Length: 125
Image (cartoon, rainbow, N blue to C red; front, top):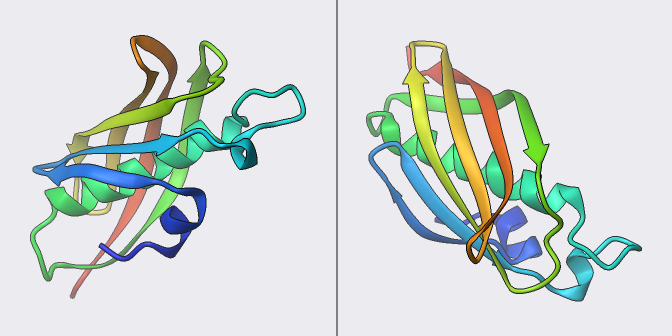
């Protein structure tokens, strides 16, 4: 899947299927804030992008025009300092116009953040 923003930040998908996704990013200096930890937007980017991919995989091909993030609530538990961040996402509920998803972001065995999001679905008429 071609995703220019994912390419820009170094995000890679390891799996996208059946309403789930697994993406990862290796923390580099460009991802750090002035305190030398990964900026919160890095975890948010993994969650948001992972949610979009998981939702897309849950919908029948050819039925979707577009989708958009309505809102995402994210809780940060620990700072991410180095290494790989992995985001595992699953669709919780998928209706005709709205879907709810959950993501967990991990650095090795440390839970870094958990997010819950709502997405708008624009289906083909």
